[in-house]
Picture (cartoon, rainbow, N blue to C red):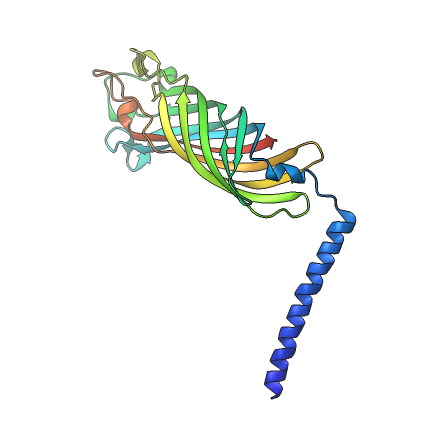
Length: 252
């Protein structure tokens, strides 16, 4: 009997605790907080723009014969930080899901170092031969499905995921020259997937959303060097895929 009484008391205290907390929270919300831009959540469509910092790198699988020596990688990728910008189109699906199209431009600088002289003697590599500065301008078109929690005062956390089409405007894919002439070539049309998380903050005139996004390519971006080119460059790489991390600021 005593155990049953203690159980009932414990359950009653728990219920009272949660009810009281909910009432206090609601009182605090009504008394001290004004929820901004409540109507924006109900719009069927809305628009905006974004700015971002990015860090692009290559994930590479090296050729065992030309790209490795004594279990050491002879090709290294050095990422750098750059920036991007774009537009936002949002379609409301329901209270917790939105569909978002966020086309933009990503400006990218990367550096590849080829220490592959050890595996061939066809050509003596100079420092200019060893280092390739790879500049890319991507037209990035991600289509994202966003799931957001209910608003808590003037903030709302979210996660999103989807697929990207990315066109590299500086790919050199159609160039007749290759690495022997100092031209590094990659694919123009690329596909990948993205995942993102962040928090939406509501102000009186706009909604500000800081978030972190990762983008990962499906396809191999490498375009092989011409036949007859010494095996110092693309022969050392089996596959090469972009992986990118971004800090995004959205204004809606």
